[in-house]
Image (cartoon, rainbow, N blue to C red; front, side):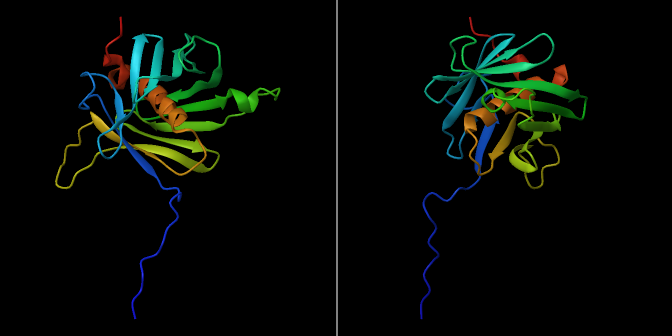
Length: 198
C-alpha cells in the first residue's frame, strides 16, 4: 500500500520573506533594496530629498511617495505625482533608544469617520533592525537580523522582512518598514546614509 503526498492548493497563502540590504547586486551601492529568496529585487527605495522617500517596484515604477512633516509625522501618497492620492498617515508615539512605536491611519478606512482610528501599529528596536507590524491583535509582518550558527556578532547591514498571509498590500507593509527605518535615533537610521538623487 502506497501513500501519496498531500496535495496543497496552489493559492495557499504562505509567509513571504524579503531580504533588506543596501548591497544587492543589480542596484547602485547604497540603494536600499528588498529582494526575494532568489535574489530578485522586488522593491527599492529612492530618496529625492531629505523630506521625501519613494518606494518603487522592481522595474522602477513609483508605488508610494512618503513625505516627512516637521512635526515628526509621515504621510504616504499613491505613485509619485505629488500630494494627490493620500493613502495613509503615520504618527510617532514613542521614540527611545530601545523602543519605537508608530500608529498608522489608512485614509480610505477613516474618511467617512469623524474620529481617526488606528489601523496598524509598528513597534520595534532600531539597533536590532527589529520591528513588528500589528493589525489589531494580529501580526502582519516582522523584521529581524540574519542570525547564523556559530556567529557571535550579527551584522546589521542585511536583515529579513517576513510578511505573513493577509489581505494587506505588500507595498504598504514595505512602506511602513521604510518609515520605521528612518524614525529611530539618528545613528541607527538606515536611510540617512542613502544617496539623495539629483
